Length: 294
Image (cartoon, rainbow, N blue to C red; front, side, top):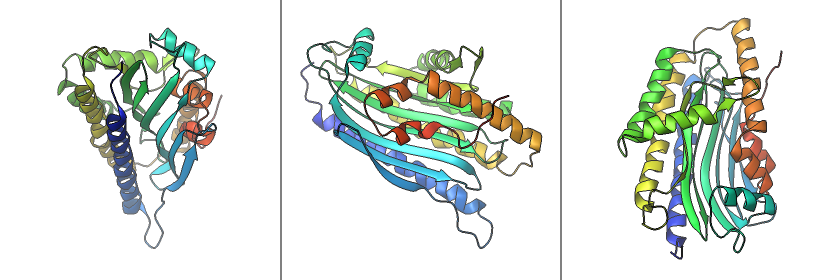
């Protein structure tokens, strides 16, 4: 693949950064509306991040101790460099050509994980990203809902937003990517899913490199990102003031233990971020502030 992707990389990275900015603004607006009279609303702490080997970095944005969010991180990154041996082998195993001769890479994306103050409000994960090597490029991402106290209407609303984003581009995407999420976000040693699912996709290059599908694939990736706020914010507004008990809080902390186990043991993005030298605090931003095991 000898196409010049410089402009397309810049376009993708800018859009991911703009999506990050819109989500941060929306979440801070939720905290503003929820703040008690006379109290300063919780705000994101923004920290620049870098790869250990150089080659780009990003922005880690974390809000802690809010009325709505006990902890939420919204990270953006644009990194590049040379893949290490383990990462090269992993890419080659996925069918990426040229890893043995030219292991350069570039990647950009947004990654979000929210752990809620109220146990009735669902935790959530979302990311969208683009990855490039000299021999291939692709998009990936998705979003999944992780309630500790499940409400069928919340699950239905979230999935409806994801399905609408998929159906606008390919009616086969939603059933395919929903099934992929159900498989990917499963915790084998617990024998259960970590939440109520959503969609997950990776290696999205519908032209297969021979034909140029970048515009269509990027448009779909944007649609997934755009579906996140209307899929999630109404659930927060519906549940954030629901009274809860000590039993509810206990269930939330135990459920967070499942989330931590999955991200540390199985999550592909966590492994890749640490192996490629990205800021460890940014990579591990997804971990909950408090969790419990029984």
